[in-house]
Amino acid sequence: SLVGRLFIAVASCSCAGLAAALLAPQDALIAVLVAVAVAVNAGLTPSWFFVGLNRHRALVAYETLPIIAVTAVSASLLVLGAPLWVYPILLMGVRLVSVSWLAVLLNRGHGFGAFSVSRAVRMHRAEKGLAASQILASAYASGPVTIVAAISSPAVVARFSSADKMYRP
Image 1: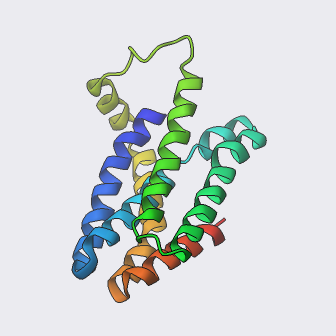
Image 2: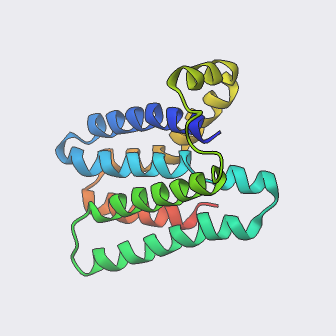
């Protein structure tokens, strides 16, 4: 569920951000932003929902096109001299808008009143395997960027992150 993914995203992003800050203390802000953006992007992808429903057009609309657009826009802005934080901020922004819009569409007519923290915690206890899988997926998604951040400059991290996102299946 989306609520479950949000809880896992908080843990995954915290771990990714901490690791990035520790591995690249000289450029911690950029490293943390990129690591968290990649973790958010991987953890909150709506692809799980659309693949399950066999709705490929929706997957293109909510997943593929927004990521291609944000990557192209941020790459263009970086070439024109924009600061390095542009890419991770745009990447997080497009994912949060996409998943928020999906949540609104899925809850149309049902409201959001059924959400509670205790219900989400109970749900996580029942779905430990899913949680572990999501944490590992987020670590896989943000790991390469974190490693590059540890051994290179912020400019290289931004370029690598953009290229990594474009070439991943």
